[in-house]
Length: 429
Picture 1: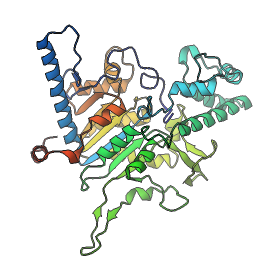
Picture 2: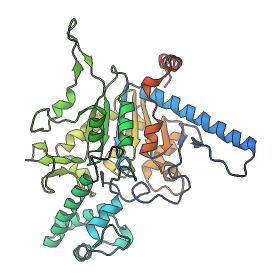
Picture 3: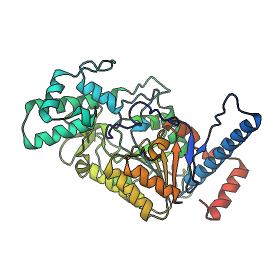
Picture 4: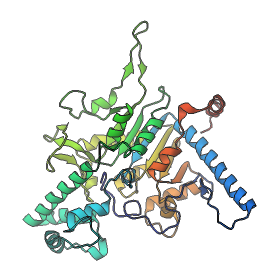
């Protein structure tokens, strides 16, 4: 899929049996309980109960809208978009299970799970235990990488090469340029965040995804993406381009320009399906790079070490720096907190940056934070900090629903703008 870097979880496979999966609700800092955004009323409920539930849902929606309005007015808005932003029946990005299916099974896309003979041989040779580690492509490729460090095997190398080709293809081909509705969520998300005040810093969007969803959606919205590559052909990576901006020069009068609307920075932390490595130092944009030339951090536990090779080192450095900025709102959407090298800096920033606000969006947020089911230390710790009153918020929604929840900043009434500005002057967030 877009980002095959996280082990299997409710985010990446079938929805869990937990009854609140995808149900719109949020948990506010220090609130003590989840608040439903949609009234769910039993058929036999009394009219008074129906009225109470509907009133509570409306109050919750108003509270969340006000909170998001103030959050988007913070000086810096940073987004970390994970695999969940490309999954779903509309966007159709492949899941971790689908990657396993196409890399390992002989009849991918069917209900039968029959492993390919070559894959079966590699699993046996490397000692990968499916019963223990599951049908997890990241775990299998990690096992293969570790095996090749100590023993040469043409068969394992061939399997790794073929799997990388499958991953590159599946993360590229699911986008349909003729389907105008496929990227509705991405377009809505970028459109509403791009309407921030031009005097604020540019939106910084970090993503672990390989795919071109955000670039394609931006193009369809007429937005400008600064992604660290040159504006000339061939487009070559140079981190200096993150320091550049685009302004509108007046035709007459003052020569000082004003920042152009709809410009944002895009940082692809694990590479992209259209990046090709020409040498150790040169990376160019290429429409269809070969699996060997593709500049990607393929799914494996070793991606932490791979992140310290250019251009990934520069992108991760930008990520660390963004989390240290004061008056910052960090939105984490569709990310499972299974990549330690990206999760640990978030946890550190929440603890050490007093001006950071964290908003975590996931359709399984309630399930992943419910004890004793939670098995991820980041989910557990961040939820504990939210309960204690730290500026950490959770929204139980998929990416498409969250995009619709984001208020349109330029559609506010004069009264709403006045209320918003008074809160900002008074120091309220």
